[in-house]
Image 1 (cartoon, rainbow, N blue to C red):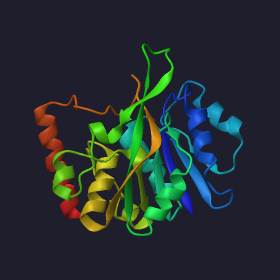
Image 2: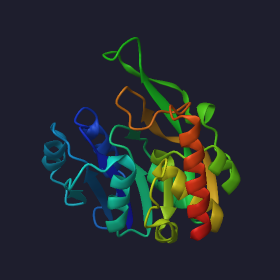
Image 3: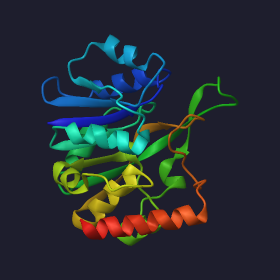
Image 4: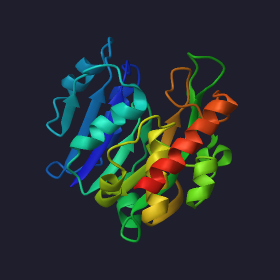
Length: 235
């Protein structure tokens, strides 16, 4: 079984296109999409409901958790042997699921490339591809490399259940969920990189994660790294 775990928060603008791009690649019987909503006040939940697809399961908001621990909530109830992470505003390219499943025959976690999708000229401009994720954040293997500078991006990650079981529950004060999952896989399992871009990764002002330099201060970055090394050594 395949589980796709997604978090939503006021994602009405792009959510339908993303869900349709995912659903078109999933089996009718042996797949699920877990959507953990974080308190949306727009049309997000009504858009999900309008799709009327039994493969979608929504976890209503209990309290505002933020992206990291809302993903944990989705992952905790996932039933799949293979888990994909998905953002609310990207587009899965045709063939993504098949390519990833084939690669997972030889490893436990897969990272793949993505096309960066940006608007031309203004927020109302047409969306167009603007390079690849690997141009900005190239994947580097190893625990130390990814502890020092994360090269994992959630929307490009998929992994086997044993990785999930080792990674849950999430430690407190994580900098990002994708980095934690990647570190666990690098430490205890086998990770492989797919050069082919399999997602159009939409970049806009409301992204939960911004690719590039972190706005966090030096002290905060030191605390995150100390917390991460302590957490990974305790697993």
